[in-house]
Length: 63
Image 1 (tube, rainbow, N blue to C red):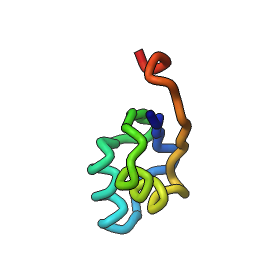
Image 2 (cartoon, helix red, strand yellow):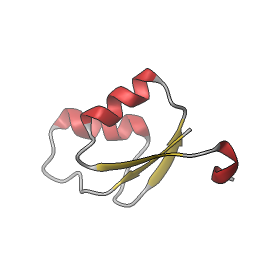
Image 3 (tube, rainbow, N blue to C red):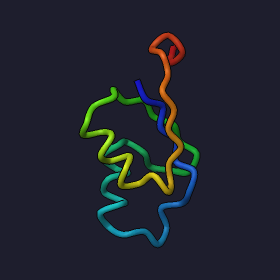
Image 4 (cartoon, rainbow, N blue to C red):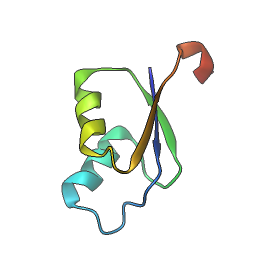
């Protein structure tokens, strides 16, 4: 399980980067979401690594 947090603003970013944030379910600064560790999610994270903070967590930590 991955904990993904947006740490930089989406203002003045490319449209495809904003769309990727939307696909991850992130809509505002400082928001944290949890996703399964899949190749698709890893690809999205790689594209936006300059504006995200990513951490691997146990499922128990989430709840």
